Image (cartoon, rainbow over all chains, first blue to last red; front, side, top):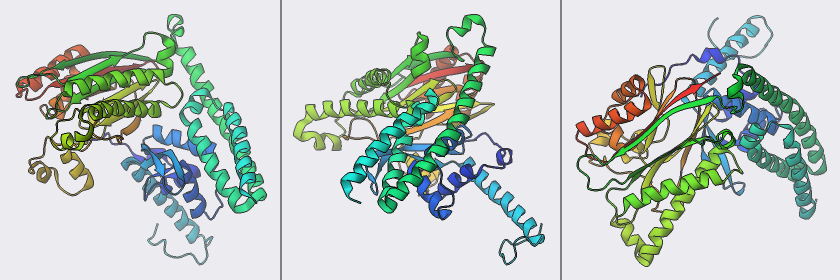
Length: 126
Length: 357
């Protein structure tokens, strides 16, 4: 079925919270606390997102079609309480890739200006 | 730290956090309050277990900062939206405080080959502004299972239960209330089956003798559409000349395609086009698909049973719904399904949305 084509670039740059939520949902669907745990783990505890930031971002991301709800079910690792899970949409994936590319370009500039000594592997020229 | 102390602190903290949530606007609190509290509880439990009183203090520092900053943002947005709303409303409309105007038509038809119409339909647009603003408008399409007995009873029971439960339960978010209403319909039908067949229920399941139904349910409230469905009754959103399915098709063929095990042609060649992978009434619990979409001015929603979407192409459904008003659209859609054979009961609801923002 044809979907309405939207340009991912129109939503850039993303706020750190939104980008981290997209990254947390990139490999699998998660509930709110699952997202918080994943973000805390990936940033080695440097980014501590409170529930207000998390759900304020989720609200906007649902409106923008970056994520979707994917039902409620219990998380066997926590307790028997039902939790609402969220998943990345196709458009959300496109926006996450576009943001990652934007950041890579910035890193390349920083590299060229010798602001990132010793960081390799970004690859390619500007 | 001993367990009772931790448990008491979680409970006290939770009470305090629950009270703090009142700083958020009503709509935000209603949609996310329960999840925020649940997330806080998880966070608090883990941090205090790991770090004790130090973690407890650190958590509250993070949570209070978060609360203050995000409550200001959400309140700002709510007020800005309210002011925009008020400034754009004519005095007469002000009393209703409704941005949403709907042109709705619902129609069901027996088709050309079936002896009984096992489809059911309900369209509820509350006349009182309070119910409309709090619960929104509700649209239901159900399709009693053709192979089973009393599909018509199951589909009618589903419509009745969903409608009643949805408007009675105002305690939670729209999505959760909607899901619960569908789950309750499943319970009602399942219990009827159990009462009827008793120890022979498994046998009845295998022989398709139980009663069951699909359902697709949509709530339109403010500028959002909330979707819940089980089975192959679907809803489409038409916007700017494009149409997309916003429910999840639980037909066997659609499941194979979604899982990537077969192409559409391969799946259709298996001769299982009529099979659905879930329905209401066959098991004590049911997995309900739920989703949310924002609606825009001039959007059109089409809810239908497979009697329509398997008989009339998506392109034709879109063209008809775009071209005609809701009443004429439903009439023409059903006519087209019947012209193409009318092999099944056919039901459609067309909702044309006007948002005065």
